[in-house]
Amino acid sequence: MKSKIKYFTTHPMILILVIILIFFTPLALFSPGENKERGIVIAVGIDKTTEYEVSLLTFIPTANQSYKEQTSLISGKGQSLGEAIYNAQIAMGRRIGLAHAKTTVVSESMLEDDICKSIDYISRIASLPENTVFISTDKSAKELLQANDSLVSKTGLKLEQVINYNAENLYISDTSLEAFYKGYFGRTHSSIIGSLKLKESPSSQGGNSSGESGTQGGGESSSGSSGSGAQASSSGSAKMEIENNGDAILLKNGKMVAKLDVDMLNGMNILNPRSKHQIINIEDIEKDDQLVNMGYRVADKKVIINTKFENGYPLFVAELILSVDLVEIEGVKEGLKVNTEFSNVTNEVATKIEHKVKQQFTKSLNLIRECKADVMGINDTFHRNNRKEYEKYIRDNGGVDEFLNNVIFKLNILVQPD
Image (tube, rainbow, N blue to C red):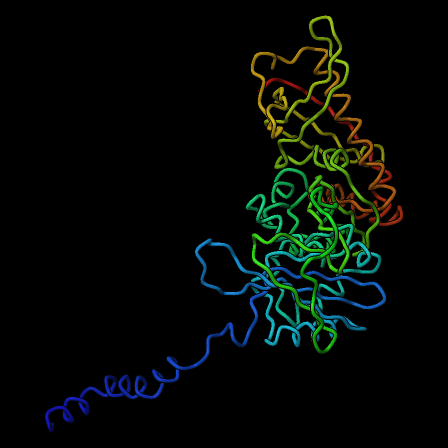
């Protein structure tokens, strides 16, 4: 015994370790898990009608043999955003933290005012991460989150994965909250966010079979597994499905100024070398003595841009080399397949593709000029390449918002097979 005491006195670090184990091991073993005190929120939705409503899609740690996530949708209402979040927290019965929220959804009604104020408020009080996918919906954000279960069940995809294709191939930049902030606080205070639509499910007959139960503090909750299907927000409503058409919302100072379809996004992305795989549909191509419609996919793209001031006017010259594939829809699932047999680009096809691309670009350019929302980065390009002339020009000619109206564009396009 004396030898053990002597050993500990000569090795004080071991004695400290033993004391720590004695005091803290029981506490660690018998203390409740963090999920008992804090809710794991994987998606958040914000709506506003006569009052605010915050909806939280929460993950429920549950052992099961199907490997499917168990989720619960909990919402809270209030006259202010803070009150709605507080009531949602009461309904959950736990503190909320949004560090794991991969998706943030806002309804289009929220975009009538500066959405940055609401998003910044949630970021500060609930640690909403900047890498969350930031999207809007034409219905309510709550309904979109409810339809998430049906989406996972049928396709195996989650909301952030549905919008991911658009982020890589359609949008000017990604559709994260960080990208929104960069545009909002950028030179022209303009940005683009993705948009998902809701449509009534073809199999929907009747209303919500499960309903929802009200709770204290203006909160509501509904739960179900990933395979249970999505229910509508109120009794008697139809089931809704998520539809991704590649649409987007154009924002200026955090407010919606225009809705963008795929053609407009393609036009804006013509000068974006990272944006590929757009489909260019060409009508009335002569093939085997018949006029047919064909679709060409942009397989690769090379963009060379030169900016300068000529005779006092800003001149934007772009050389664009497009490598294209002829694609066809094949099979019941309408998958795209490259047609290698007829992929040669004739002069007629090249001319029509060039005309279509310039038409899309002009249409998109006119829109962002009208909205004074330069999401193409034209101002940034001139500022980077011709800083002194650019700064002098905007001082003398109405500022950043008017600059795009005065730029002269020259777009030269070369189309070739991939």
